[in-house]
Image 1: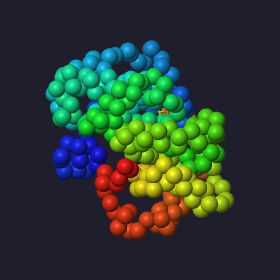
Image 2: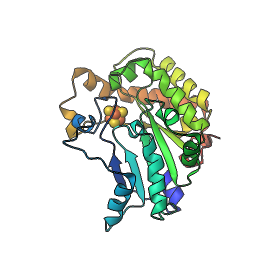
Image 3: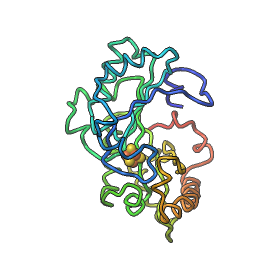
Image 4: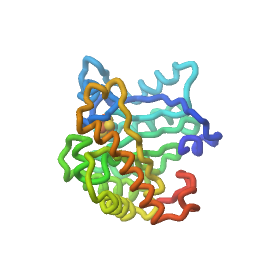
Length: 263
Ligand code: SF4
């Protein structure tokens, strides 16, 4: 939807996208569709490229998609990457015809630590760009279960998302609902949606739950707890839908995600 809106095209049933992956991530989600050796900055399975190299390789494709996804791994371990891609697209006169999308696992503050304010403003104001950031669970326990990271980093995800909204980026959210089965689901979900709404009252309407499935790279990682979580995610999703029903009218729920304002 964000891509087709930016490109002024009918939303297709299926969209072809050119994907570039940063071969590094600071987390290890058990459900990650990327092989773990592609997350460890291993030079045996990855290469250094400049952003201009990537765009020039993309231009050599005969049937080029109009969307480029900067993903990973965690793209923002190289916070300059999105900025450099914008510069490279502009250098090749593609800034009005190619939509740039990037993913973010909400794990670090490098966007502020390593980019200048003018670089941050450029990213926020670049018209053909949007970012999606993923909440890796709906509470600290599910976050830690999913990422193998410290549970207090769950809180940091909200701070980082709020910072990106404040900078004026066109932000969307994913959430993954896998976690070990537990009681008190409605209360946990209410707290999660409260925290989204503290960032912006409309943020739940820009948040897309991702269904976790087993892919070839993940099949050997799935242990007993993960199998339970794969089943329990449907209960969590039902709690999410109930919470949204309590807080939003059916008309609000029907607004296309691209028309939900976070201003
Ligand atoms: S944060 Fe994303 S890229 Fe990193 S391990 Fe998790 S799913 Fe994979």
